[in-house]
Image (cartoon, rainbow, N blue to C red; front, side, top):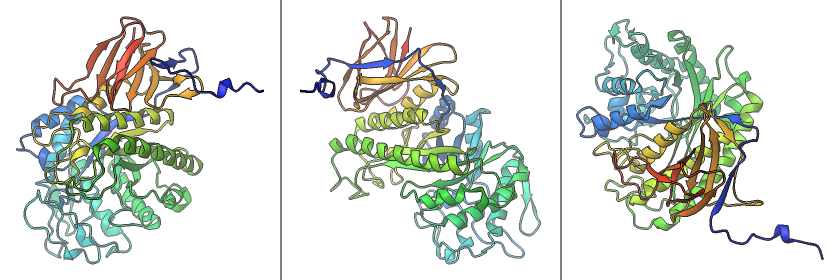
Length: 500
């Protein structure tokens, strides 16, 4: 009889082995970890949480943070709310400027990304049917009415974005009637992203979006020759392969138009039976399995999309700049979000980010810095009332502080040979300073015992997990001392083990 012992499951181990192959060949960390902020009422000047939220954004110290004035609050995000006439225009940056100024100040000179994503409604056939009222905090889910541009050449849209960009980059602009509008702003944006989720409400085809991208880029390039551009910014609802095959093919663009980067989004969620309340939705006990299963499916999509990009435009960067989770009742005006959700969501995005390190993805953006009730609250990194950071923020900051682009990735196995243990993910890293660290993620709602070889008594585990209180400073990572290489990962831990 043949010996099948190698095919048999091993005897259950008291701890999950984690084995970094420190002597193996390594490769550098390329993936930038960041987030994005948008023009929402909880972070407007005068709001109770404004100062604390922007202080938290400043303390996060991320590169390429993304600024997104979204269509849901058009009275803030659209500085030209009515079409020009031969004698008048409606340009007014009074509501938008404070957000931009506070965002740029919080960056403290670090590179940032601009995504002034909203096209005015009046540029679309049928768009004049939109009623806005006077309250800038009112959510307008129906703002993006119409899919057909009234100017089929797209010059009107490109001119609009040129004037908007000129306000912030070039100190002002001449409007449609030749009148000069002075801003005094001379900001620098490392990237300008052209639209946000054009495949969703506007349902722009790959062909039309590519034409619009070219038109906008052609107009904006002279403002700052060093500014780069991001295309697509596709929603998580459907990743139609034709967007990638068409947009990433240089033959489909006007001569000289750069393809610097493209972006996609992904959000994991349980089945949405009732978006406005908990009744009828899947129980909390199912969220863990749902989130991580959907995450694995997304990683397969990432591999496919990356292969298309390498084939068509190998120099174009791939950005995952909105990655997050939310419960089923995403629009609940009075949400009751379980405390452990924040750590679960943090462990999920930390796991996906760690996997993206292996895939050489250029940027991973945790969505999003500021959500609030009625507007997908569970994606937030800070409390919408106080601005205090939650576990999603602290897990992100832990990784930003401990793992850096240019560090070296070390091959790492989890579990006994031949039987990787999916409950815990591990990725070893050697810093530029020579110090050894291991990213550890517990994907389960119970603690896990882990055994790490070559781990001295002086090593320390820093963890954000289900036991972590929200709010600073008590929400900061908890430090755990290690004995004989054995450690316990708390439930939903996002952790870094620093080896001495």
